[in-house]
Length: 150
Length: 85
Image (cartoon, rainbow over all chains, first blue to last red; front, top):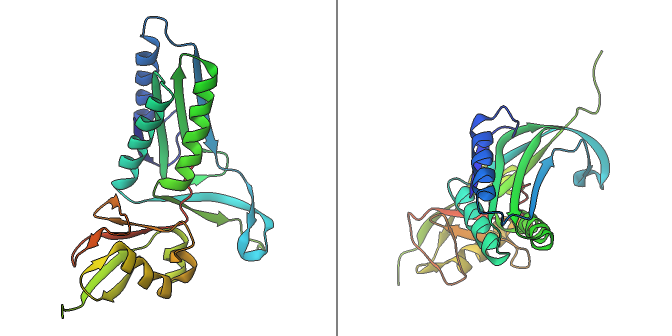
């Protein structure tokens, strides 16, 4: 399953915490089939290349995520189902932010549970590659001001 | 000859910033398809809708193939240079 929520994915985001906890419990309640559980967090990095300035590295304040609703969440869910089936996972859940997420905050969480390590890790990697190519979510980089007036 | 149709294409991300608008309006000969909409967009927004890029259209909230028909009043969106995560 997949969910898009407003703002950063902190533990204080009650809805995402409940969804993750419920998915994890469902996965574990499978008679000892789970042999690997992986949680990936995408975190907003401070330093990024500015392609409008020949790739010069600059500091960010935040990222602003824009989603095409409701298609983005539907496509995210379809992708989670497709990859979970192909890698025969027991559980795959994706959570993604909409709106502003500050540097150091979490914008994306992917939790996978499978029988073995190899397919669980492969599923995480494939999901992220497809997310960046196929899901109608865009991010705008909010730069730190280059100069400040005193 | 069929009357031309008017299509509003929703823009996101850098395409929206570049166009300084959340949509562009196209006038196309009918019948239109996703391919003919993309070809017209490639003229108006070449950085984002060139056929050589990964630009795609969504028609009524679903990814369209080249042959997907596009009618006046359909919700059309340019899905170009996405980058979640």
